[in-house]
Image (cartoon, rainbow, N blue to C red; front, side, top):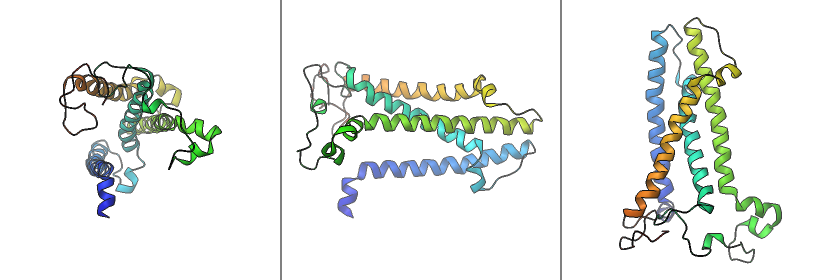
Length: 218
């Protein structure tokens, strides 16, 4: 068990941070939602009911959507784009280890590599594909939650519910998306540029402390 924790400590810590933050979102989210419902004559919901509300779905998946979009584009763009001096970029001189063609004879190679053909071609791009599929799924769930919450508010106000096409032409959903996208793109820009000039000893996201600023790659 100790060995497992040591070998997986990075993912375990971030999973625990996610669970803690997600729990906080739910606790304060249902409180905020029920407060809003009480003030407007709506129905108070239980915890299980809250998970099906537009309020929960919109607030959760609008954030997941931007995270998966950011990471998917970042993984894809780093294939062919460069930033001189950044630890997040590949170098400029020749091919790197990640560019070599996979060998089915390599010891402990993943099964798609040994299988070859379609499965190998899919596996070559599986990280980008998975992240972008998660983005697409989150995008549509965000849209569903957003329009559901909008129509809940409309009903409370005695107004007519909006259709999918009507809502796509309104500003709320797109504002929710772009306000998250811009922050994610800014954070990626920051780590790309800051890693040119700044260091963190011991981190895989940083160049060695004594590396010159012009040195590109980790």
